[in-house]
Image (cartoon, rainbow over all chains, first blue to last red; front, side):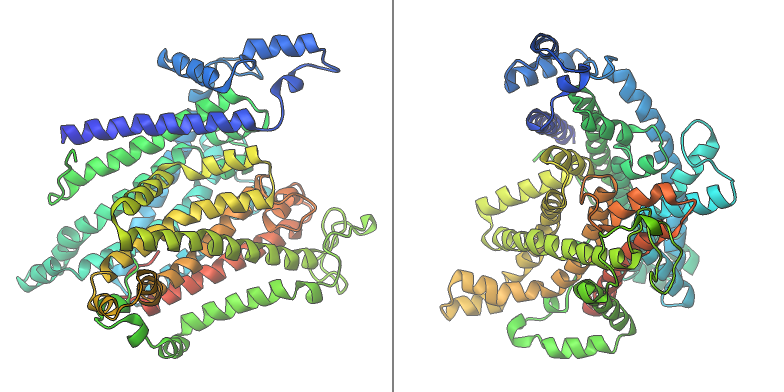
Length: 308
Length: 299
């Protein structure tokens, strides 16, 4: 177990090194020069040269990457090239907004999704089941930007209940959360239904029934608990993905989360900012995945993690 | 996601080429209401996409500033956009692009995935280690973010978006095919084919690959839907097709400003994307129910 953990954490470090290096290379070869954007009017060669030295752009790729790593080891993510502010507080601030959005969307989607999926499986092949499956099929087929724009049109423009954009109050959080949750909810409901049906075909459920347990206990204790194990994986993956910021939802609602920040950084070729965003979201994604793997040990006593 | 597809073939001890009755399965499929609906929608979609040239009443990129933001009329059945382009024509050409992206990315990414999955599952050893490690690596990236970075750096274009999407498709196909291959290669009919002197690639493509058909058909349909969504999302962010191309995601993004004054500008491409994705999802869902003996797996 300890050995397993050490190996996995080592893997995480390598993966993060790989990801940051790939992003570094991409930004290095990206067309467009940040210094040309920063100098007003017709830039002189001296001005450009001074900026390039300041940002370290005159150095070779590997030297720059080594410098980035050295800075990172001291907990410094560097300074934004565009607005000259330290990257770390800016990224953390955006992460705060992203976390709030992710938490509310996930709560909605997990609670309602699991409930809908369970009802659907309990009443398998009934009208309720068919309806849930049809509605959720629409759910997973509707792009978030379509859901978002529908909500804006009806709940903001027509009814004026919620603001169309921005962040700060709980009202600002409603539309983006519902938008994100609608897709995840549909996905989770379908997943829950299939997991539950799968479990119900298992021998231990037949045994439980055969020994005369009340149907409620079979469902709640034997089937329900085991169906939740794969759900942990699915929801864990969603947490990981949402930590990176939901770029599209944030764009529609002008919500100042991590995704927005990263896209703006890419557009202005602001390498330190992009690196900061990628590092934070990738670490989140990978660590959540690791936690999910570890949780299996607790959830399923048959699983033993080994260092091999 | 879709790695748990199980098939009839896995349960039988006969070679899929000998035992599988493609036609019988097809006829059985036509008795299922949902398969018929799914197929019907996909045919309607491909029909609209293929026939865009004849069906469209106007040129999808020709603008007429005198006829901006018109409501639906006889001349413009779905109205016009903010520079007077016919929305119906743009929708039809947009569907063509959407279908093309979905099918091509699955053909390229899925095709490569199938070959790699077969090799990994059948030959094992070093092949398997290398291919599966690479697959795990690809799947452990927060992929949508990296797609965005990749496309932004390569340059925003529909082709680059498609490349990124195809790369993302590949590992999912590798996993499914490898899983099926692993269980098929131990079967008696593989041993029999070997005893009869068939070459290894022959066994792989004539006896193992057909066994993967059922999960692959489902997977292909679902990923078509998935990839159409992804490309529309990238275009929506300005990272895919560029204006004035009638790509549905790009149309939506540009039309957003007119949501209040002329909702049809947004509603038309939105309905188009929804219809296309839904058609393939419905088909995938129905096929899974048909081909999956236990009829359990949903997504």
